[in-house]
Length: 138
Image 1: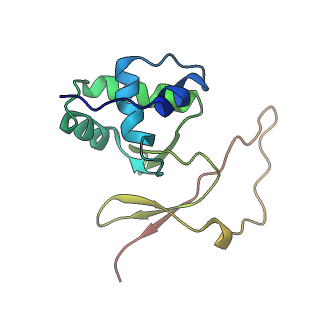
Image 2: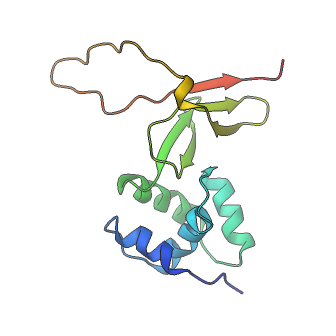
């Protein structure tokens, strides 16, 4: 049995210029269907989609997440240079990374103050600044 698709997921995709295929819709429902922001990995989304009864390969999940990022629907945050998390909140905001559980969560943006950034090299501009604050239990 598959989860019913709500119209809001189709709108989320089409407003970004993406065709709402069955697989994209299944992933979109899990990402934004309840209106809550979340931080997910491809593996955790793959587990959720399988649990929901939909048939999507892990490679399709990875590829779709990358397409969603290029379309501006998700923000990719890379931790340790290898593990990627995908954030449904695409606004500029810092993150906490919990080293013991490897979970990513939002940090309060109003508490972050960056007073100066280095000048970009000639021919380049700063596209974005990702702030990941690593935490461990004291």
